[in-house]
Figure 1: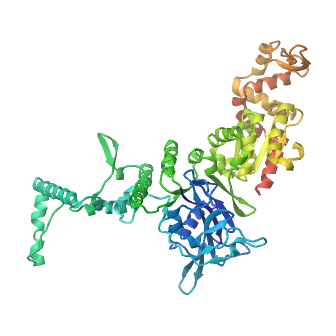
Figure 2 (figure 1 turned 90 degrees about the vertical axis):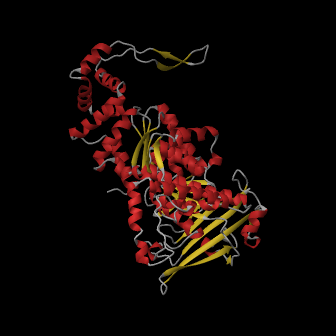
Figure 3 (figure 1 turned 30 degrees about the vertical axis):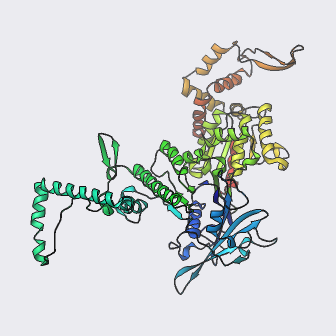
Length: 611
């Protein structure tokens, strides 16, 4: 059994006001820039660590309001070995945290700690006041900021806070005594017995003497520098030249870390920032693991809270995935802010928190794992998180099922918006079939990402897509036609059919000839006419097996509308190659974009306030 900080509330700090977030043993914070990921880490630092970084500019301010003070609440709960909440703290933690501070939520124990920070203009600094909350939830009609408090009897030394910043370098860590690696090295001498210490330092003394004696250069330097003795005019003075640290307590002064092939390694100074940053994080892991080992040996409580900012800095994707498992293995509780879809894809559903702006305020989304069945979790993980992790950072996503749309819509969007869609945070995602929309719209809804569907118009795709939307919206669903973010191609056709019906015939033929040569359509009609197309389902039911009967259909391209059918089939057989070419050809022609595509982009422009 142990403890966990399961909730954090923030009021009046930077861009967060009246904000709450849930934590697990490991929590991964995602979202676009400037949505408060770093602010959450800094709020934990205020509650558990230092406030030295605070300035008057850290107070929340908007067009109509400036916060008079900063309020940071944390809730500590008892948990079992699987990090699930239990009713009571185990005896060691109850003593450590002080029974007088414990409150009850029904039968469940917790400690609510409030930290307030008010700016003292005379002292030009923030003053901190730490209190115990008498309740976690406010009374009806009251704000949580007004919950009554009591004076604490609190010692949080057993819950140390560590902040691992995005800019880290193991080379600097080696040189600085106050770094986590520096602190570890400073304690090296304490890990030896007196006898071992004397023996090791004796070997170092002998090594130093041999190194000097066998080097003409070092011997000359020592001989000449002995002249310092006469200048100092002291009888007890002695000059020593020690190429290697004389005392083990000074180990960090000459410490170096080599990395590379066994026969050809280099010091960290010669490695890139990826290796140096990663190594810095791992030396911290060694530091906190050592402290956990010492605490266990001394039978004292120890539960570190570790905030890690952008651990992926300078690392390639596979290294980022490996790094996630190394962070999870650290002792204590971890809160990780990241822009990496690779780290996010490694996290569990219950670990991910997506931050977003809603009506100007920062909100936090998380998956309701209790409401998801096993198949939904699998699809969400495999089809969205593992392969489309970039949409964690989208401002809008457009979903569709066809290959042509995936190639053509981004090109048409660049024409409409005047710049690439990715610069606006708009992602175009092929879901892989009309029955596969649900995990994508569930994801978008969870993290408040505006989502749009551009659907083929045939009956079966529309029916499957509508079921997914209805499942998501529940009682808010009326008809698919009432959903302003769903765009269905008219006349029971798909993207290729839409282009034909809106009279882009010239552009279609030009695109096909660009791909397959002049007169390619005539050649296609000549060679394909009369051949069997794919089998088609009829409405006739077999009396014995009760299944719909399928029939072979021959291609008929020599009739009045045969050319259009040939164009449709030719496009459909070459979707991947055809999409980007026809989109570019339409733009070059100067014609207006297809009407439904314009409707889609107009809706996005309105919703995202693009001008």
